[in-house]
Length: 193
Ligand SMILES: Nc1ncnc2c1ncn2[C@@H]1O[C@H](COP(=O)(O)OP(=O)(O)OP(=O)(O)O)[C@@H](O)[C@H]1O
Ligand SMILES: [Mg+2]
Image 1 (cartoon, helix red, strand yellow):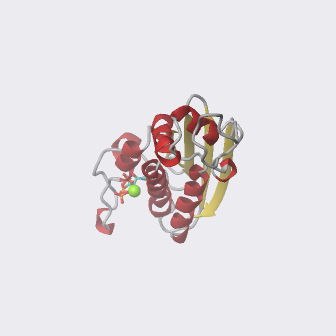
Image 2 (image 1 turned 90 degrees about the horizontal axis):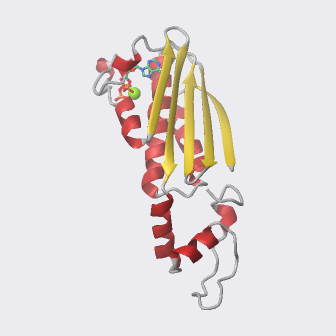
Image 3 (image 1 turned 180 degrees about the vertical axis):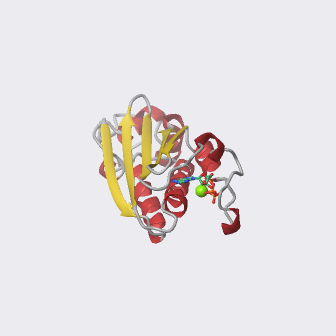
């Protein structure tokens, strides 16, 4: 099962909040924990801010954002933020904690480090004069989610999961008779994610 979205936005600073909210809304469909969602939004915010501030520095260019949610055993969200700005001459160096080319602008050089620690994978490719692509992914933790579901619904894990996945709308005999969650508002498909 797969869901995706694509965005194209001008590199204006007000669009940083928009990108963060848009990706957050997409990711929220996969029912992440509050912490997972915050990690994803912060990482997107860092990548988009980099494109605005460093990539397109004194100009306005286009930032391309792509998100994909895939269900395998767990749900994985993959996010790509790409610009066609100045590029990074030495990516390895740029990714070192505290490295910044803009110390005068109160930059701390921690953007890539934040992305690295908040996401499961981070891949940065760049070419001087051509632009930068930041690809990151995060698995949405089904184990944690099941525990949360048990707590929220009061149903045993198997029943909670079945309701969550929208596979059955009524509890079976002997189970607590709580109303089934409306799957349509949180899921991204019949398979769940
Ligand atoms: N999209 C980009 N285009 C060009 N250069 C970039 C881009 N993203 C990052 N860089 C370069 O990599 C450096 C490190 O980026 P990082 O996000 O880690 O720190 P920062 O942006 O300088 O500071 P902070 O994110 O903590 O405010 C930047 O200072 C900049 O030189
Ligand atoms: Mg940064």
